[in-house]
Amino acid sequence: MRIVEAFPQVFERAYPAIDPKTPMMAALPLLRFHEIDALPLSFDSGRKHGGIFGASCLARIVTLKPKGFSAFLQQPCEEVSGPITTVQAKAALSHLLDIFLETRFGFARVVESKGVGALLSLDDAIGLYDEGVIGSALRAKDVASKAFSLPRNSTLRGTLEAMFARRIRRVFLTGTDDFLWDRGIIEYLFSPAVLAKVSQDPSYDPLETTISDLATIRARRGLPEMTLGEAAGALRVQRGQCLTFGGKVVTPWDLVMKPWKAKKLKIRASR
Image 1 (cartoon, helix red, strand yellow):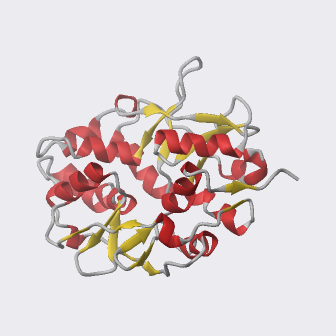
Image 2 (cartoon, rainbow, N blue to C red):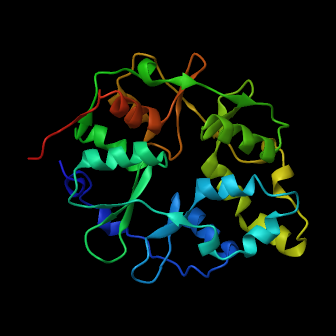
């Protein structure tokens, strides 16, 4: 099956590219507005397609010296950008999944012509279970990971360091089913309130905020014997959602990429 067959509506939501000279302070809020993990840049012809990524920005921010957040926001996007892996819409769906697995970003740029393409992510891929495009005999218990938690008084800096060290996107608040994920952190760091504080006081360091001050999501309760299709349906109700049971967590990555890597995910043949 080809990518365009699996995602027939993909080009109805193409994202405009932005000028590489745009300061990060102006560009990053667009990640919040569009609720996407990457924002394409409009490089001149002949250059590789690039963009700014939410996860990469967080990785850069957490390495900044205290009070370095303001200077980071003044940098032009091209200084922080990286290449966006591009795939042709007529390519096989399996190729897209291989790209997700190789880059570990869980998204890619899909093009049909020389124009700016659309973005596809794992949030899109889990919907393929409902449509019968993909399927697996595995159960939720087979792909679950151990949930990781931190106390409410943990700083945002320490939380991000822990997330990157463990290559995870979600951190639970100790003793609860409430979690904070990287998109929530992006929404906080680049929110109008934080940007206004930084503009007024360049020394302000939002990474010293405790995670108890950030908005969290309540994880949905799951069952170990749920099919991956049932789990995917449960996760589609809210972006960033995950399932928990017995101290374990199931995320979109677990539902698609773990069975794909184990060669236990089937793709329906083209009609």
